[in-house]
Structure formats: structure tokens, C-alpha cells
Length: 337
Image (tube, one colour):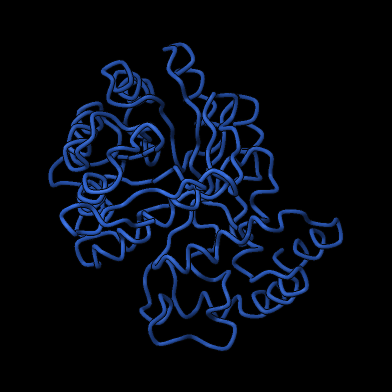
């Protein structure tokens, strides 16, 4: 929602109806409620992207009731630029709404040169949160994640750093991402002893990537931790984009490391069959793919990216039909297995 201020420039005023439609789910056994769909800033918010488009997406998201924005230190490109752009937009539009927002950042992947700019050491994590807060212009983030497991650093050191970040007031909650169920259980026990609120595990999850069902979902449920799922559309495979071939401007056509022509060709028959089910449900394939993840009781939110406000709005329509019949679930399992 936009209004004109006294100077004649366009100012942002959030929609008064923003909390009337979206569904909110509890993150594990915590007091935090997350929107069923959250916005990730991995793509489309770096310096190479149009800042005004990113601003429009963030405004639209909040107007739809999306309160959770997810970042990481290395999002861009270049590294750090998504956080910096977010900080610019936050300062212009969202400062009055800070207490309504749940903002995340992460560290754990390559960020700066040398031995202290990667993985899970105390030095890296504490330096990283300080840098992230400076880029975003924030006093604290609502949740700070260790982005991936580091098998060469003692887990006690990594979790201890997360605990101190909370004690220093730089984050309210902590999370982890990409950990298997055994290491998740170990991390949870350490954080319990440190009396630190561990509330979310951010995991890759889609119809085509179901590794979390092999033990992780049960582990986090037992630990009282929620799941927030990323890459729900399998980097675009679970959309209608590739039903009739590979568009020249698509990710697969660019042969990126996380999606290429071979991925599409190996899955095209499954994509077409799944799209047929979605059509019978009155949904697009992308909408069904999001709804399918949200059927899991451990999943508090599904993290999506968006290249435009219209794309965001289309994905939010997944919430219009979250119910699946047993026949539908069995057919989906048969197709993707």
C-alpha cells in the first residue's frame, strides 16, 4: 500500500488488512508464529538486481501478511549485497514495523578470504553477525542460523557461539540448517544445556528431495523444534515453466550448478504427471508443491523466492487448498518415487 507524503514522494504504509488472510503456524514448541509462506532473499535482491523491484516484492509480501524475511551473509551476488539492499529498503519502508517482522540471517558458507571467513568457528560466527547487523542497519535479528554443519569444528564451539550471540542481544533465537538428524539431535542437547532457544531447522525439502523424511522430521518434533523448508519448487522444476521445453531465459538454460538441462530432461515425465494432479485440484503445480510440504505437522513455514510481486501472489494461492486426499498422496508418492 502506498501513500503520498507531504513532500510529494511515495511513502509506504502497510495494508491494514495484512493479518486477515494468511495462515500462521507455531515454530516447534516456541512462542513464535510464522506465516505459512515466508520470503527468502537468496535470489533477486543482490546488487545485480533492480532495487525497486525488490522493494515492491517486500512491500507486497508484508501487505499479504508475510512477516518473515530470510537472509544470509553470503546472499547476493556479490556476497553481502542482499543484506545491504534489504537494509536500504528496511530503512525507507519498514522501520515503523520492526516489531511486526521476524528477520533471519545465517552464516556458515564462504564469505571472506582466509581461514576465518567460512564454516563454523566462534570467530567466524560472531564476526559474521556483527557484519550482517551493520549491513542491515539492525540492532538484532530475530533468528540467527548456523548455515551448514562443520565436521572439523567441535559442535560445542559452534553452538556456544550461537548461545553467546543470543546473550549479547544480537539474536532472539537460534537455528541450524542442512544438519542431518543425528547432528541435529546433538546440537539440540547442547543448546538445551546452554538454555538457548533453538526453534527452527531450515532444511531443503520438496517432492523431489525428501531426505528430511528419513529421520530429521521425527528428531525435530521430539526436540520441540520446527522446520522451515527451502527450495520447495526444486529450483523451478516443480513449476509449469518446463512443461513444454526449456525456455531460453530459464535457470536450466543457463546451466547453473543447482539446475541444468539434464535435471529437467530426467524429470519431465514426472513434472507433467504432477501438473495433471495439480490441475485437477484447481491449482498450479507450484501451488500444489508448496501445499504438499505444508501438510507435514512439523513444517511451520515454506520459504519461497520471488522475482516479482505477481509471482509472489501466485504462490500464496497455495494456501487456498492445503488438503490432500489419500488417493492424491499415494499417486504423488508413486510418481516421484
